[in-house]
Each structure stands twice: as structure tokens, then as C-alpha cells.
Image (tube, rainbow over all chains, first blue to last red; front, side, top):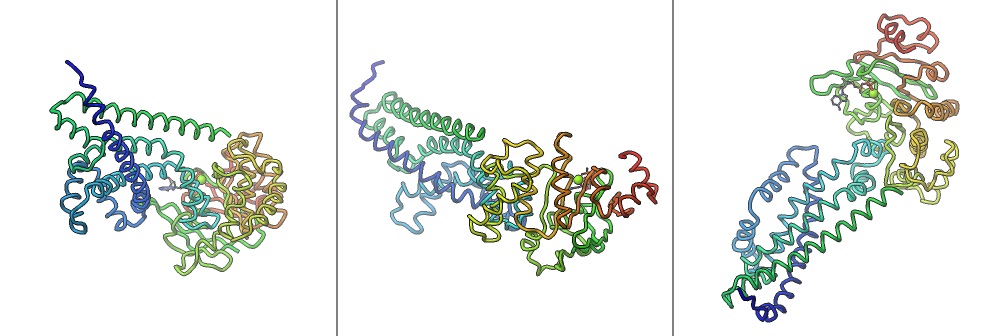
Length: 221
Length: 240
Ligand SMILES: Nc1ncnc2c1ncn2[C@@H]1O[C@H](COP(=O)(O)OP(=O)(O)OP(=O)(O)O)[C@@H](O)[C@H]1O
Ligand SMILES: [Mg+2]
């Protein structure tokens, strides 16, 4: 088998641009997902079951159906209602955000509920409101515990953003498929794209390990 | 100061407090004893609504906790609570543990709160630990910080739920000493404890609880030396 490096070099500018977009949409996805996820997590922990219900439904729908299906519905069904023509990048960011919000909500909930309930009781017994206790006592402690699973979620999202290629969002995988189509070749474009994903996810893993080590030494002060 | 009338509390079908009525006068020190599962913790947790009350009334300094119009957070600032497992905030220094509520709940200035916190820390003998974190403290030190933290809100009443039960024996004394000082200073206190020596020495009254009822209450000497009820006798014979 001859490996045509010229295809790789020809397409490198597009791969790099695609990589930038992949990083961008994934980052936007987790950031929006973080905010929505926190709200959903708090909603799901409400003591009122009627408030909990819609948040539960949300989480079940977004975790229980394939992201690809969600993206297609969002891009071809929902986004066209308020944007025409619908922009695949916008659809991709919306899809990734809504999807990651469901997973991040569960990460937050697990993190918050892992904090000893005596902490909430101590805070409340000092006269703090529920919101104050969350903000000043529970969340600062929960943050440390949710950082590792959030890192995982970011890595998952980065890989899943490749589904954006189906919407023709010009991220990394889109350019891989474009190159494959133009040269009618499989190995060169897909191996290159795979390697770029690998570099991204391994760098992230390394970064997460570093952050985790820092947090655990903080614990020992 | 505290008036409890026909207090009832259930967890599901398990009726834990059946009909508790008791009044506590200002500056009185009331010690609550009783077998495990008799409802002692549940009782004092009802006094600041850490448990929802199912029936009856709890009045703290004239405010009825069961009244929907009562601001429970406000009442809680008047009721300090010390837990068996300290429940210090591990992400805050000792000083921050003590100033957190005064600053955020009372709206006190940081400098003023810190100054007060240092006075309280000195009072519990831990002045030099202000900038340490809870995990570097021994159990006895943690519990003394927890007491200082509760006192920082200037409560009118202090509740203690087995404050020395999680401590190594050699640390029990230092915590009891702080509590005795507090009693001498005139704090109204309700203390759940197995420390009968403490009950005898500083208690104005001892309440014996069993199975969700107050079986018997009296001055410590009378209750310990001449218990009236069989169940009290049986319990005391096991612990004394
Ligand atoms: N949150 C809860 N949910 C359900 N049942 C509970 C809860 N808290 C306490 N109970 C039950 O209420 C009863 C009384 O418990 P409580 O903790 O008040 O007893 P206690 O007198 O403090 O005992 P101990 O000396 O062991 O601390 C027990 O049967 C316990 O199982
Ligand atoms: Mg108890």
C-alpha cells in the first residue's frame, strides 16, 4: 500500500482550520452545557416533585437518544424555525450544548450529593438560606469533585462533535470526509483526522491529570 | 426561652417523637439522656427545624417555628447548634469557618467579624489556629472551633447533639470544659450526651427520653440517685 503524503499536505490547512472549529464548538458546548447543567442539576434536586419532573424528562431524553438524531432534529427541524438558512455550526453548538447539559447535570448532581449532608445542616443551622448554603458551602466543595468527570465529558464531546460533519459543519471530520471524497482515498484523510483527534484528546487527558494532581495536593494543606 | 408543646415527629410510619412537651428557662442547662433510637437527636433537631415538625408547637424566644409566617432563617441565627461530627467547612480556614455566617447572614463587616472570631477562638483556647484548615486539627480542637462558630452568631440558645461522642477519650475533657464555661456564662443550653458527670455537674435538669416520650425529668441529683420509673432505673443501671 502506498501512502500518499501529498494528500495530507494538500489538505493540512483545512484539517487545521477544522481542528480549530472542533475545539471551538466543543468548548462552546461544554461552557453552555456547564451553565445549563448546573440549573438542571439544581432543578432535579428540588424538593418539589413537580419541579423535578421537567428536569428529569430533559435528562432522560437527551441521554436516552442518539446525539446524531438530536443533531438532525435540531438542524433540520428546530433551527430553521428561527433562522434561514440554518447554519450548521449554530445547530452543532446548540446540539452539543443541550446534550452535554444533560450529562453535566448528572455530574453536578452526583458531585453535590457526594458532599456530606452535615455540611448543609451546619450552614442552615447558622441561619444561611438554601441558596447561601449552596453558594458558600456546598458548591465550592463540589467543584473539586466534579472536575475529573467534567474533563471526561469534555473529551467525549470533542469526539462526538465529529457528528457535525453530517450537518456539513466545517469541523475536523467534515474536512476528512471532503478529502476522502475528492481523492477517493480512505487511509490518508481518515488516519490523519484520527491522529489529530488523538493528539487533542491525549493533550486534554494530560491537562486533566495535571489539574487533578494540583487539586489533590491542595487537599493536603 | 424554649417552649415545646405536644411535639410530634414521624419518619414515614415510624413515629419517633410521640408527644413531647417541655419548657426551658433562660440560662437553664438541660441535659437529655436516653437509649439509642429514643429520639434525642430528632428532638433537638426539631428545635431549629432541621427536621420538619409534624404536630404541636415549638416556640423559641416567643417565635413559633410551626407558624408559616415565621422566618426560620432568622430564628436559626438565635439557635446555635453543635453536631456530633463537627461539620466544619473543610474548604475554609478556621477563621473563615467562624466568620462565614456573621458576614453573610448578619451582614457584619469582615474586619469586625474577624476580630470577634479571634476573641472566640481565644476563648476556646485555639487562638493560634486561626489560619489553619480543619483537617489539620484534632477532633477535640474541631469541636471547640464548631462551638466558636456557633457562638459567633450570638445565639440565645445552644443545642449540642452528643458533642463528645465522636472524640477520643483524652479529648472529651477539653470540649466539656468549654461547655461548662459557656454554662457558667449563662448560656441557655440543651445537651444530648452520655457524659453523666457533665450532667451532674452543670445540668440544671436532666430529661430521660425513651421511645419518643419524656419518661422522667428532674434535677440531676434526684434523677440519678432516685429515679422514679423502671425504664429510667434500667437505663441508668447500664450507663452509670
Ligand atoms: N432521617 C431519618 N429518616 C428515617 N428515620 C430516621 C431518621 N432520623 C432518625 N430516624 C429514626 O428515628 C429514630 C430516633 O432516632 P434519633 O436519631 O432521634 O435517636 P437518638 O435518640 O438520637 O439515638 P442515638 O443515641 O443513637 O443518637 C430511630 O429509630 C431512627 O432510625
Ligand atoms: Mg442521636
